[in-house]
Amino acid sequence: MGQEVKDHLRRALALMFKPLVRLLIAQGVTHAEFSETAKEVYVETALRHFETDGRVNKSRVAILTGLTRKEVKNVIDRALSADAKERDYSRPARVLTGWYSDPKFQGPYGIPLELPYDIGEADEPSFVGLVKQYSGDMAPRQMLNQLIESGAVIEVEGRYKAVSRTFLQSRLSPALIQRLGSVGYRVFSSAASNIDRGKDEARHFDRMVFADDGCTEEVIEKFSEYMKSRGQEFLEELDVWFSSRKEQSERSSDRKETGVYMVHYVEEANDLGSLQELLESRGVNAD
Image 1 (tube, rainbow, N blue to C red):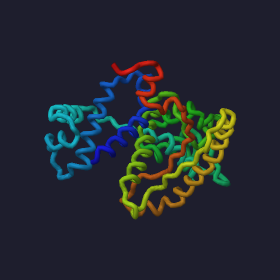
Image 2: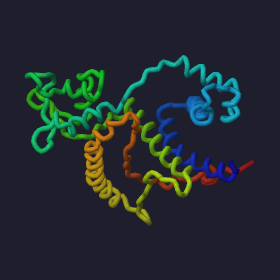
Image 3: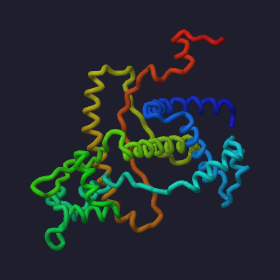
Image 4: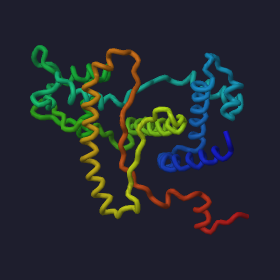
């Protein structure tokens, strides 16, 4: 790879890291901890995409990543001894999607039914049945508490009513932090994949619209309200599109996760400057 390309990638990396590192510092995650995570990702990526012959050649991985052979060994040893506890933090969203899209849990005009917690009569839809179908082995009571806490579900005379098809986690919950990783991966993987593809290869949709000369806080607030309304309408339309093709996808075992992520961004001009510019603005000069 040419040095010019490396320089451009490092500048892009610095820009992507700024909001993430601000969050890490605020939550007490040190550079050493970040560095260890980066080592793990380098080793995993080298093995997954550049060493595919089935063997684990530590020397080869060290050359690919720039780590020492000892560092590669330490990363591999930690991974093998780690507690492999996987959690699926998208389960509440899946339950809400089923509630809004599965005819079994819908009333007239596709409105989600108000569900009893458990079966009251034979074959009567229930919240427990909904959770079993769309969330596997997660405890129904735990799921209900999460949905009520998020404001997506309310209790009405002993039954439970879905009032929002969107699940919003509480601030800094494990689920919300997991979502940050998922969103970042999906955005960056799509962008990187599009850059890697040749001119004639199909690319994933990647478009942006922005105000040419910026906006006042008042206009930004109005745009935010507009996006919440129109953006939600569009996402719900896409959700219906996916639901209408569920049977078509189920015919094959060769399936990949796909979707659309939509976000309203607001840039702070000061955040985009370089470390050199920051130091010079504070009167720090090279010795």
